Image (cartoon, rainbow, N blue to C red; front, side, top):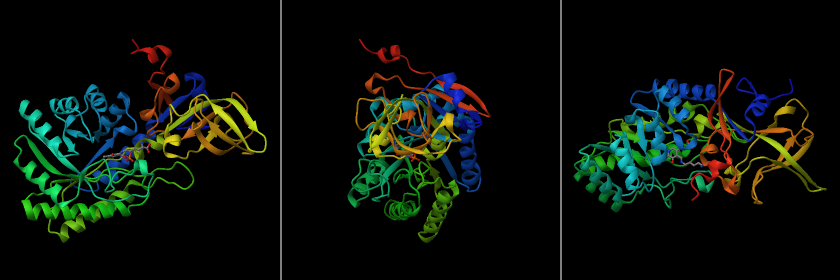
Amino acid sequence: MNNYIFAGCDTVKLAEKYKTPLYVMSEDYIKDRLREIREDFLDKNPKTMAVYASKAFLTKEMARIIKESGIGMDVVSGGELYTAIQVEFPMEKIIFHGNNKTIDELELAIENNVGRIVVDHLEEMDIIEEIAKKHNKKVHILFRISPGIDSHTHKYIQTGQVDSKFGIPLDEKTIKTAMEKVLKLEFTELLGFHFHIGSQISDNGNHIKAIQIMTQLMKKVKDEYGFIVKELNTGGGYGIHYSESEERKPLAYFTDSIIEEIEDRCKEYELERPLVIIEPGRWVVGEAGITIYTIGAIKEIPGIRTYVSIDGGMPDNPRPSLYEAKYEAIVINKAEEELTDVVTVAGKCCESGDILIWDLKVPKVETGDMLAVLSTGAYNYSMSSNYNRIPRPAVVMLSEGKDRLIVKRENYDDILRNDI
Ligand code: LLP
């Protein structure tokens, strides 16, 4: 067999059945990660909660899979929340984030009783209090704190540094204003703090540093305001394998030391150990997905490089052009053949930056061959666009060797859908 097998399925047959470009996701892989979260984090450590960061990949079917797993969900927009509502996701397990939630989004969240809203700036508390009062509901909030840590990742996916659009800055005056304000609110109850230091993080040093800062803050608010932090949300950001230098570590690599550090610091500061929340997104779905393309134009620039163009590109995967993200890929109908050539995989957009992979080793390729780009499960479908009026690919879910369509391929009428 010369074809590439992914999650027990022949990828060439999938491409023939559903056409390309095609997003393919493995439910078995996603369920393995969700099981790892349950067994190695939730069951192992008391007083813990896990939510899936749905911005990484969300469709109704994905929301159903998460719902079935018993794990909660992090949403960052009305659209993500609406998807959860549509599958009757248990609302108490939803955490609503965002640095600029609109009033409509907050209304939707409060009407539907989401479990926690993460407040990102001080004025947001007034809006929440007003809506909560109108609905006569108690709303639970966390403060997102910007711990002032520079994580070693691409600057567009760092979030915890001092100069960040996210979170409440950790300075004396701001914290004082925030605490004095929240303790006066009637319909809004602060449960604790949240931080998220960035994404595609491969070692735990900065999580540990952030915990040291956050536990000091916990002590400070206890001493100065008598406020006991009941929950500490440590965000997500656990890295995965995209290319040679990157690997996905077991969840426990991150969470064991997070829990240990929180417990040690709480002991040191004589604090009660809070409920610890994690929010992985990429780690759950990143390696669960591949994208299959058909190779079209092949252009050799003698002595310089060979461009192999595919029938997709930056509209279905903007990460290489946005973050210089690296990917691996396989010519799926020649999976066993020797890698004799080096080519550059170009997307079909009218844009020089639309290159998916520079210098990929491949067997001898010809027009009509098919390519699977690996580890595209996170931040691909969810970040896709219709740039150049290109319809979005379909999404197929694989489970135990069987395939099912979970998102239809867009057609040209879908592109025109809202045009007047
Ligand atoms: N929690 C919060 C508050 C976040 O802001 C994020 C990601 C996560 C959890 C989940 O992070 P993860 O575990 O997936 O790394 N589009 C970028 C990634 C942006 C991540 C933004 N926030 C990319 O394609 O790399």
